[in-house]
Image (cartoon, rainbow, N blue to C red):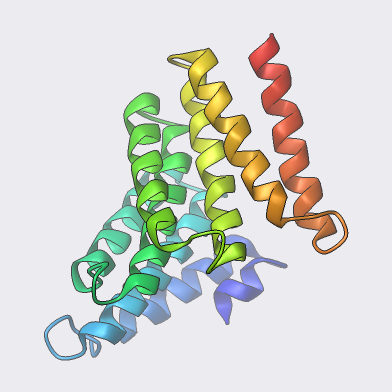
Length: 195
């Protein structure tokens, strides 16, 4: 509830409350006693830290988000829990992209790309179109961020392809806000790549 509230007001304060609640839950939801609930809580904790990183202590909060996602992945092998695995991988990718904004840009972008690609093994366009589009958007952001420091032309092409894949799902008729957001990312990427 606090994470959802953070989307509309007092982002930092509500994220900190969410983090405190998740950490309290983890005193009971241990990996040994309740592995599934532990993984879910770690994944939610990672999301909360990722959201908090948008407004404060970007590197520190991204590192905490990454640690939480990696903890979740220890109990969510792809073969047994494909959806939970994909959610954790997508969140991990988003955290690495955000971390790349402040440190080790190329290395963190490559980690983000690997995580998004791992999520896309599960999040296929046919089976999970919305999750597929969300992950393609994250992948596009990772590639364009990587293009700032290496292989500009190749990474720009990959970013554009990822954004276009997302826009195949986020049509202007069905998802006008998401379409506008990804379309704007695509336009900015094209301008960057041409300049």
